[in-house]
Length: 400
Ligand code: CTP
View 1 (spheres, protein in one colour):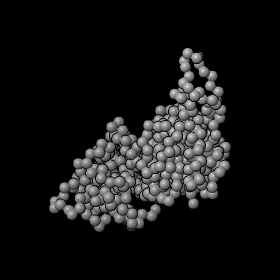
View 2: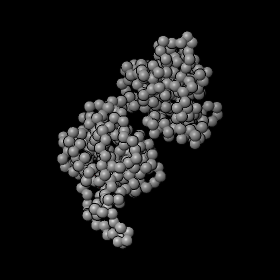
View 3: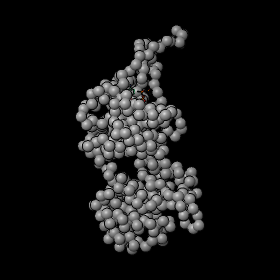
View 4: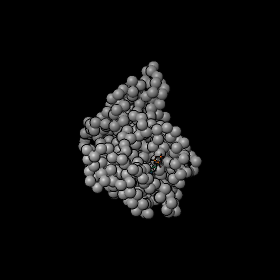
């Protein structure tokens, strides 16, 4: 774990687990990271700021309006300075404030005033962690890219037991190291992503489409751009905004998508085909609107070209190809089969047809099946988290 010189803020909230933040700050300092500590007022009731300033060699910020006023505004200057902010423990109150964008103390103001990666390690009583308010706030933050180190199950403050205990410091450090390793790890790489469903015309007003929302592909494109890649996104019709930093090509039909993807693929180091491409299209779409009075039309279909197969047939040396397998059953088996038939490096098998996974859901249940015979079953994660895991797998397993 190489943290030397990395600029990390440790945020500490007021909870009994605040004493464990001392260990987190100490281990980061021992790993030669540049550490600054920001405490809420309540945190200073549990641990003295002197403990942290002695460990890190820097003053602790715990006041939004310190007297005398410092030369620099603390939350904005630290927000710009930090590469990563880890809050341990993160209380229900801090999570709620951050989800709402409140900024009435130095830590919550810092979180709003930064573009750094944010890692939260919650600690609270089980009832508070499992309260719908907290779980919704956590889901909001996850969807915005905030990383959570899940609390452990065990002894809580007082005689209580249950989920809500601050994660072990090794786990918090591992999450910090993993997030820092992602920053700019795709710099200099060209990533092509397809997203959304296609529309195959029946006549000028009707089409055959599918339920793809385009969210998964948009998340992969956005994540690759955040990680420094040059990104092209080829997308079927969707209501989503273009991901910041990606060049977007909008298409309608499978044939348009084929042309756009094959054209852009020549220069790409990585191609992620998240689009739900129509397998068939009407052979002979009507040039004028079909009239109801003419009776139900007979629509003859023909196969579209398989874009992934076409990509693998012409792939250049070192190009990494990723496909998806959206399935209602036997996700792993079908993903394995697609790995072979499409001759790609990685297939992301995901369950569709259930509320928390697949089309238009914010989360996904997925398995990553690789040409290297490795199979990773991921827990229920947000599409943004899944995008991160896919790029990690591409980086670690297939990019030189
Ligand atoms: N795909 C493609 N071109 C097509 C159809 C699919 O490139 N004409 C890609 C998708 O983008 C996805 C993968 O192939 O990455 C698997 O798509 P899927 O629809 O699950 O598989 P199909 O090949 O269509 O097979 P089946 O419908 O039998 O599951």
